[in-house]
Amino acid sequence: NAGVTQTPKFQVLKTGQSMTLQCAQDMNHEYMSWYRQDPGMGLRLIHYSVGAGITDQGEVPNGYNVSRSTTEDFPLRLLSAAPSQTSVYFCASSYGMPGNTEAFFGQGTRLTVV
Amino acid sequence: GIQVEQSPPDLILQEGANSTLRCNFSDSVNNLQWFHQNPWGQLINLFYIPSGTKQNGRLSATTVATERYSLLYISSSQTTDSGVYFCAVGRTYKYIFGTGTRLKVLA
Image (cartoon, rainbow over all chains, first blue to last red; front, side, top):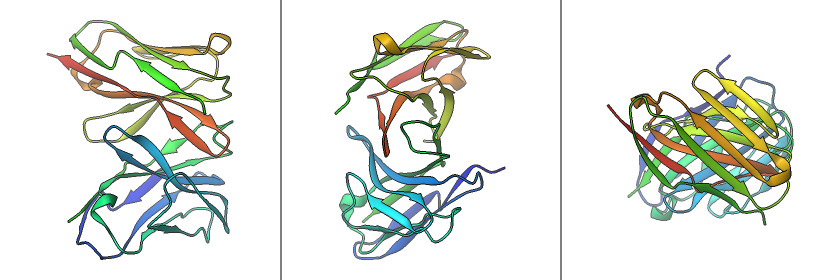
């Protein structure tokens, strides 16, 4: 039982490049989400999904796309990387909605955009 | 929206000392968790504790939901306890994290 697995752990991108951050969970959780962590800003919600085929925007969605084709996977796509997207990204999953259930987080992806 | 504040913001301890970290929240919650972010940046689940008291080894936590606070106790601290401790409350579709307590345990 691996929990929530994120890849890669570290990534350096050039401005304008695109990439996908991978997130997979093996707990059969319906709810998955992506956060970014920035100094002084805490963790902010980017996108979330309440089940396969259903996604919605969080607080800071601009510049990011998501899709949820399976229960297990929830990739985050950066379409055209910008230095402002330099951050640590966390994927989270839970059995139900955050208001009622325990969250489990991946180990994080540290992204630098130069 | 709900505010989640933690105190103290920073804490330095000698190995073996005990400490209490506090989390105050401004509205009623059904879901509260404590996390440890280690020096490598990983968020480690410590407790899922919407109410009551739980213990896990040297760590314990108490949430008094009616008074809108939670406490995390660390006893006999070790250098591996260093890092940032966050409480987080769940609200509809997102988790709201507190401001964090940065703990450094000196050998």
